[in-house]
Amino acid sequence: MSLLIVEPFYGGSHKQLVDLLQEELEDCVLYTLPAKKWHWRARTSALYFSQNIPISEQYRILFASSVLNLTELAALRPDLGKLKKILYFHENQLIYPVKKYQERDFQYGYNQILSCLVADVVVFNSVFNMESFLTSIGKFMKLIPDHRPRDLESIIRPKCQVIYFPIRFPDVSREHDKDPESFFKVLMHLKDLRLNFHVSVLGETFTDVPDVFSESKKALGSSVIHWGYLPSKDDYFQVLCMADVVISTAKHEFFGVAMLEAVYCGCYPLCPKDLVYPEIFPAEYLYSTPEQLSKRLQIFCKRPDIVRKHLYKGEMTPFSWAALHGKFRSLLTTEPREDL
Image: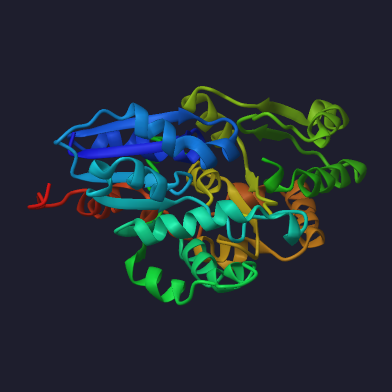
């Protein structure tokens, strides 16, 4: 139990990462909370974990996602505060989309900044995630009306690094923030043009589901093959292997696990020329406007052989667990400290 993993939002990519670490790394223990009510997890999970993680002299490293208020946990549990503390950013709250900048809850981003100051190592899943966070600190802190702290970016940056999210690719032969409105609008346009296509809409459903999902499912009718969450990872990969094209219309994305999994299964990716995507995918697979996306899809509907014969021109290996496990092992192992 030298490695203590704490995950307040145990679902999606957060769950995928810590499950992988627990399976692949020796001598670790995992404490989690269900992936519900994200805002409350960010606000209160530190107090819960402070009461429910047993005291142990075996812990040497604390690894947590940035949903956790690491500052509060370290203060409430000084024994955990002494550990080597590693904070992993799947996403950051300084640029997370909100309808109006004034609506952004200052506390979530502020908590992440404080957690970085307390952490010994801060790890981001992409360069885009790291730079968008660090370069936004100054502007974000200007929201404070007076007596603002200074030089936070220069204090935090030296302890930051990027380790891509590790994907255990399968053995195969081949949320509102994802902007479903744009996605379904493009599909309905294809249908209006009487182009032949089939679509699978896969993903986990949380509390709030936009009306556009149910409306689009009805409107797309027989074009829909699969709709909704597939609990079996094998079934999920099977659907990906049947597909020809995978589309992202995300308004925000800090890595894109699902897109890379689909590409590994043989799909041709179409992603916004924005966010993390230019860091991950070659320019050929990026679009700038919904109109560009629609035109590409119209061509593919008329000539599906283009994508079925296509060989992906990007790199997949750098994102695999096989390539990244050495970095994670190095990060999550440490020599015993004399003061422990």
